[in-house]
Image 1 (tube, rainbow, N blue to C red):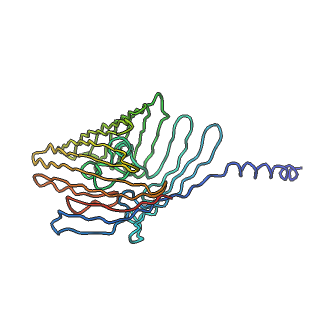
Image 2 (cartoon, one colour):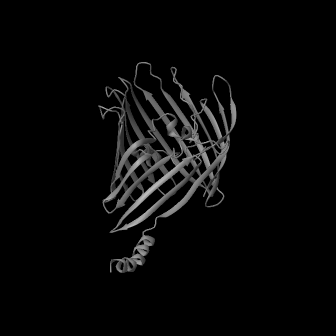
Image 3 (tube, rainbow, N blue to C red):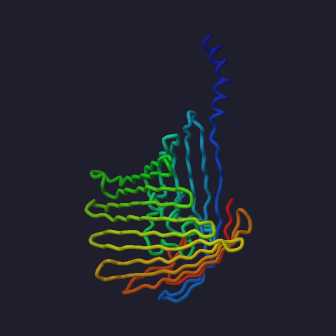
Length: 331
């Protein structure tokens, strides 16, 4: 009898398994172009570079419906250099992102190597170059706190346009959980053309005796014919170090493309007063829904020994001026 019942149950088990299969999407970006850098002590250099507007990548993401409005999700994203074929992010297999989690009506909980809430605030709300990371990116002067290892992140549902994003990165140091840990979070509002977000990021040092913290208030307003961006950051530590940053810029549709303009300022509050300002301009021209070409230029004015460089999505740069020209394909 037991064998008979088991035989009857097998088709139902296989049917349920088929219904619960994970839907997996393979995606990626291949981005390459010319980068001309100048202003370095060693002289100007022209490179064929990868990941100028967006880091070249190959990713896998999946979702399994668990019922009751809940789903399991995962994302594995590898970074690579299209100019050489070498792995990015210091050779990590999935150095861009690697996480798994659950989503539902109460929000999303994910675990792994992920973008910090602070970085997403700067990228999505406060920087006109945030989504492309060309030469005029705010991250040339501002702290970005891009990725965090060992991170647990909770993103709430939106209530009246308000959403919270909280994250904890475990330091994984025996005897003291505060050592090397990171704390990050954001609270944002999106309503109609306006987006406003407040973010905070803190990293404790290896002995938990000091920390670096960054607070950022970012906003943008889409008036249709123009989107305006404004951000202000306050940075503290290590020690008595203090600096304030400001980003102002616009995105303008021009013919079939988009023109980006930005001004970034770093105000060093320490006695050495190593201030810096950056001006950036870029133009992106879509050739199709998946492919675009771009050109960008940025220059930094370093003062009192400051040594900030003009980088892009992948490289930190070598000098205080850079020109980008390339092509990006999404698949």
